[in-house]
Amino acid sequence: MEAWELLIIGAGSAGLAAGIYGSRSGLKTLVLEEKIAGGTTAEAPLVENYPGFRSINGPELAQKMVEQAKNTGVTIHEFETAMGLDLKSEPKVVKTNRATYTTKAVLIASGRHYREIGVPGEKELRGRGVSYCGICDGPLFKGKRLLVVGGGNSALITALYLAGIASDVKIAHRRDTFRAEEALSQALNQKENIETLWNTEVKQIIGEKIVSNALLFNNKTGETRELAVDGVFVQVGEDPNSQSAREAGVAVDEDGYIVVDLLQKTSIAGVYAAGDVTTNPVKQIGTAVGQGITAAMEAYAYVRRPYYKL
Image (cartoon, rainbow, N blue to C red; front, side):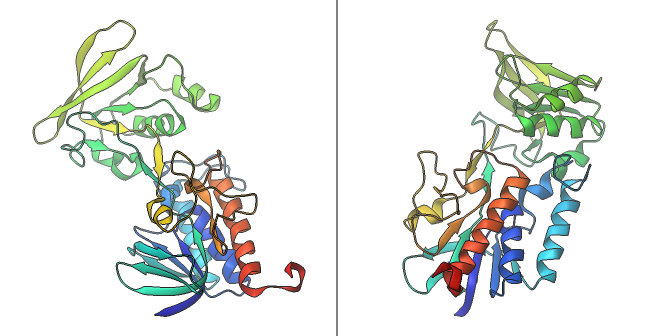
């Protein structure tokens, strides 16, 4: 078994920031990522609220973080999933689909996964017109008719991005007002090829081999109709990737988010959490970075026991 001082689960903004600070502090640091390093930051079409960059696309910002982490000495294993955690032993043990590791401290930054709307046709047509990532799949729909489902920041950001690719973009939102930032709502009003369908719920996604229509229900008028679309982009929120942590005894709230204190400590000594998987209510790149930094410094104090922490 390979031995590490700090093992981080998740290579999104929180995990990468933690890796940078952990490695710079002298800890032998490993980051495990079940997909490609960069996390959901890499899926953002455009980032305009991260300090230091007036405007930068998500993949570029994510790549800069990955490169910086590697340059500081962080080891990153992509496509490696943490499957079993023994967090109460000393040292702690992390089993993956490839290997087993021991570590003095664990930092969970596993983020969240896309929430489904749970209607007929959604699972069957996923990857064949149903998508959860605008920047990943948007370029496949050049000149097409698209439907975005949701009313928060992610839905509006996705719609704005897709408007530059598709011929027509409609947003189906089950309420009569958005819950997104005002700046995004204003930007939406300036796009001629975006239309908002208020009080509208998607009841079914229709298609044989690929998406062809969406069945819409107006919860105010009671009207049901079919809308011809080539793609449906679901943007209705996310759920935390906390199952392994829960099974290992880490305390979570009623929604499954890992409970942390101001220093990112969890209910188990030597185990920390940061980013979207935690109970922190603000899910932004900047807050994830800050939490990752705090968690890494606390992990350093736990592992090395410096004089100021004795």
